[in-house]
Image (cartoon, rainbow, N blue to C red):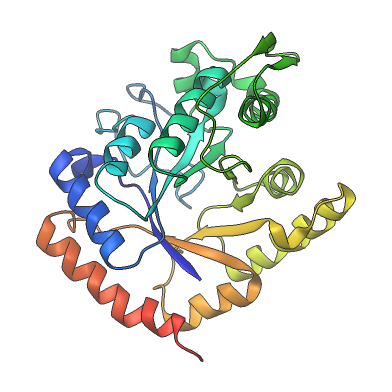
Length: 296
């Protein structure tokens, strides 16, 4: 099982020294992935419910510092050598897919194949409105954007003729480091996101799902993948640490048995200075990661 660290580009971790400390420490301790969140703007006084929290309250306010996700990951790419660099998750329906294809492929090229593109359809309606993007079209635009990315990454002279994107043969170079492209993780909490991952993704990220929820997601991924001629075992499930109980060895092993490939943790509040980050992550490494990696 892999372990990642979430929310590495917001709040105090938007500071370059804190961000660099966390990334290099995470790599040193054997974490697999660092995940950067995505908000281009935060509307003042937004009322949309945050779906990842039972309360519906977002863990940030409208003046919360959020470094732009790909710029932040590029900064961390220059400071690290092995750890994967993931968007967790990018709201691609707010962007031009051709620009995303270029930026993500460049990140992957410069980091020698370490980019992971997590994509979600978004929940903050007021952000869509501010950006002039249609909230009602976000699902269709997301799926079409993924088609565009894969075509542009696959070969020179790609063309596309869809509802949201229509362009003659163009070349997007550099292409990703690996011929298979950049892994695309489909984020979201509805069962429809599991089906989307089974159809067009490389992994599914439902956030802080329970073991029983993971089992349900995996079953739906299995059914849908087979219907579309894909191998269900090739589609990973990635979860965030739960809100309602500590992430201990037993729970990690139950997640692994249910089919989870990676668990993403977040730093506790106040643990974002160098000394406290090191202490907390080293403790997690010895008390959980090393024991999960050892034979049961």
